[in-house]
Each structure stands twice: as structure tokens, then as C-alpha cells.
Length: 148
Image (tube, rainbow, N blue to C red; front, top):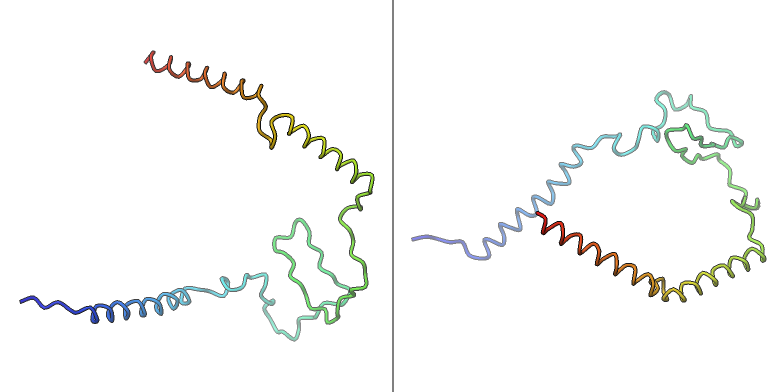
């Protein structure tokens, strides 16, 4: 006679195997990791005696260049930043005249789209042209199929 396990035994076995897999997989991943994976070589302190490494001066500000391979990491200069210096702007402020002219251009463009069929859809002439192109392509395809 064949003895089959009951549902409880099957459930317990599956639960144990799942628990072992859940514990073993992260441990296996940790075993294959290196220090280079955790922190790139540029982020690590230079080798040697830490007491010989000098701290950067307060005036030294790292300036990234196009030729630098690694991004410049922020440095602790030992001072707080001066937040009273106004930030430099990337572009000059847009004048009221430029804003109104840009607004008028957008209004005219929107009005042109509404005339063409609304919401950017093609006008009636465009639809006729597209349908004619579709008919020609259909006829060409049928002609090529019949020629074969």
C-alpha cells in the first residue's frame, strides 16, 4: 500500500525549503561582494598614514573639469556655507515684452491648430491626401501580389 504524506507535512516541508532559500541567497550574494562594489576606488581615502593627509583649506573649492573621469565629491571644509550670497542665475530674467510676445505666438499657433481640425488633427485636405496615398499603396500591393 502506498503511503502519501498529508497536507500538513507538505506545507511544513515547503515552508522550510523557502526559509532556507530566503536565508541562503542573500548570504551567497554577500560572499561574492568586494570593497570595490561597495565604494568605488575614487571614494576611498588615499592609502598611507591618515595623519599625513592634510585637510583642504577653506578657500579650496573643487572645480569639476571636462577631463575629470570621476565626479568631484563634496568635501568637509570645517566651515558653514554662507547662505547670504545670492545665487548666480543661469540665464537673464525674461522681460515683460518677451513674455507677452511669446504668449501671442502661442495663441496664434493654437488658433492655427484649431483651423486645421482642432487638437492637432489633420485638416480635410490632409485626410483626402492620406486616403489617396492609401489607395495607391493598396493598388500597388495588389499588383505586386498578382504579378508573383
